[in-house]
Amino acid sequence: MSFDLEVSRDIAAPAEAVFAALTDITRMGEWSPETIGAEWNEGFDHAAVGAQFTGHNQLGDKEWSTTAEIVDLVPNERFFFDCSVGDFVFSKWGYAIEATGSGCRVTEYSTNLIPQEMREASTAISGVEDRGVHNESGMQTTLERLAAVFA
Picture (cartoon, rainbow, N blue to C red):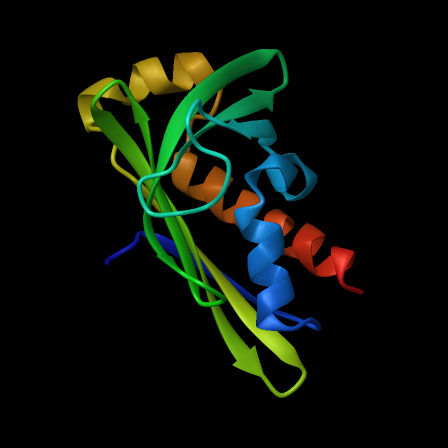
């Protein structure tokens, strides 16, 4: 897979513990500065390829929800999902985890797939004008908050 953005951080915890935290999507609001919560969609209750969940997001006075589907999952190594509205996949997100001598290195990935002609509507929904800069900053914050759980 090819992604537009990636941010890495070393975390002083075993890969298994970090993977368990990341794939418990009900905790997503603890680390993400944009996602305020998430829950499994009907028929799903854990991370598996094909499982779907809904993420709830907020920035200032803007609120919106998106559907996500897990597209790649390797226990303790990878967790990737596509975000969509209806059948339109507008972004791809994921985490890769590598064991290190002092814990693990987590890399978060993101790709914005919103076509140029739809970016004005996206900005109206989210309030974000430069999604690349915004996402990179949010990814750094997400990994900082995740690391703090294990500090």
